[in-house]
Length: 386
Image 1 (tube, rainbow, N blue to C red):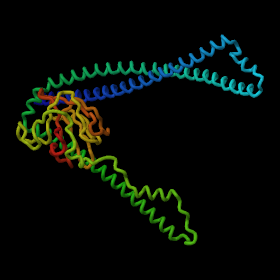
Image 2 (tube, helix red, strand yellow; image 1 turned 90 degrees about the horizontal axis):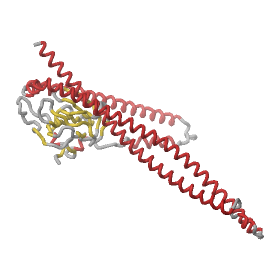
Image 3 (cartoon, rainbow, N blue to C red; image 1 turned 180 degrees about the horizontal axis):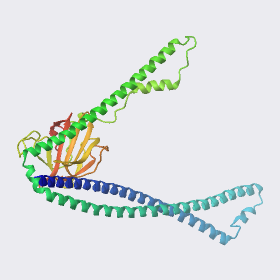
Image 4 (cartoon, one colour; image 1 turned 90 degrees about the vertical axis):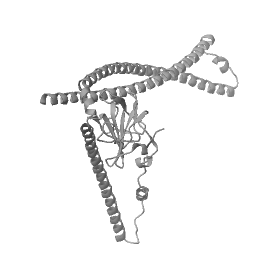
């Protein structure tokens, strides 16, 4: 019996490590892909700038070539002698003025050509550096894909060694209840942390408000004690401070509770089971919904918030939980890979994970919940099916 329990524990540990490894490598691949696309865009901009520089250089060279041809044909004077042979002193002064401008223009052309050549050299170096970076990124991506294949194979082996046990556990009511209790404990911890953080923030704001009121009272008392005949001059910064304080905080977004009925499900698919309905295994009810979807499909956040859990949890696989504020949490389980890490801020519609299978050789899809103050909510009252 002890040996059997030890084997089960070892197999579950191996599965958890493999699931985490898949998420880690997938996140790195996603980051590399983003970096590669940024490098490609920068490379395209540099190549366009290089073409512009080359076009300017070609134009300057043509202009200088024409000047040199005229210089060769007309000699050193370049047609200047006929202008200087004028007998009218006024005309001679005007010609000298024009010649001065002409000389400056030629010098400007030469200086501009030099600057363009220097810029072209610099851009060539940048292009060489970016192309080297692209090659390095491509090599790293190949290495990461090879590592992903390895960790996926390890996960497949771990699943094979524990698949029979998982299938058997799926039919056990006690196991389902234990899984729900495990998730409930995680959520309780998250709710307590969020409330503690909110209490600390409220206390900090209260302390700041009281300190501001105390300073205002002290200032009023000081002004009351000052001689009436010589009031202190009002300063602009005092007025600015009062106006800034009166304006109050500016809202940065809509509260989650105001989005009720306006959000969409995190993945397209087919709903399996309804909130509150008895599960097929019996003994427990659905606390959320299961959405059948293809493995690898993007799982998107239903609204903005902070990732407060991103890890493997027994019974839910790779699990990610987002805190939307106001004691609201959205929960996404049964993922193939987690694309966001603990503490990251996400926006509504951001890809946060990819769909996985249930780990027991069954169907693929996403397990999804919404909770308020730790209590499950009916997702169909919050998100739209269309």
